[in-house]
Image (cartoon, rainbow, N blue to C red):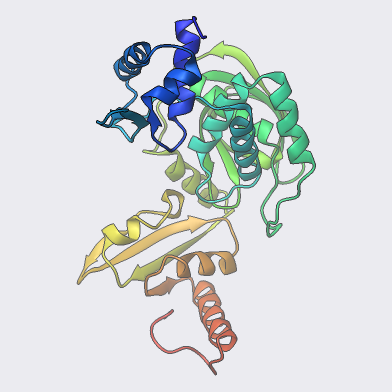
Length: 331
């Protein structure tokens, strides 16, 4: 019998998070308490914000359902290890959709993992090899979690940095945001030694260290970290500008386009224009635009239009067609 009420509530919550309905009698046996105590514990969970649904009947059951807010979850050892391994595998490469929120989740999880589980996570990751394209920069998940923690905690960060030309330096910054561009991670931060905002490629960062010194956040010169990164890359000539028009409404395209790629603007007749600047290859951008699922026309640069035409022809031939594809793939 579980006499410790907090421990019993955690055990009850762990059972309810299994996707099934639990009869009151079975919960009573599992917890070693009366059905009346189970009902009181269910009421306590509801007061804490957990949406527990009860069914009527001779032996009414309980199940956890979706609510308006996300209450804390209780994970067993295997679940915690599985989630941590998955997040670490994704965080090591700047995969689209595995953004700062995922890295923050990993940082929170690893902060509370017992040492035995952290060892299991590290062992599993060391023993597995992800099937990736290999064209993105690989990053140690620990680097991202340290950075994410300092961003969330508004804590100064110290690290070694290797510039594009190979020059090495030590930096102390006030981290603002982590930004994923699809294949790379960047840190947008205020550099205290330079007295200005800077962007840092995370795969060039070594030995990040949270100093423990808090700071009041500064106002970024642009509206968002993604926009600041785009402008910074363009000014350093590490990217190229492009303009594309879509035969679709701006709202529909915006729902599919990642923020770092740009914001579509309506141009009438149910069409929209996307202007942006990226640092990846034109071949990669051609593929990314095609995967959005809308007909589009490349306005500039001509090199990107050529990549789209070559890609279209290659796909047509791969599908058993001949020659160049028809329609408006690129203009």
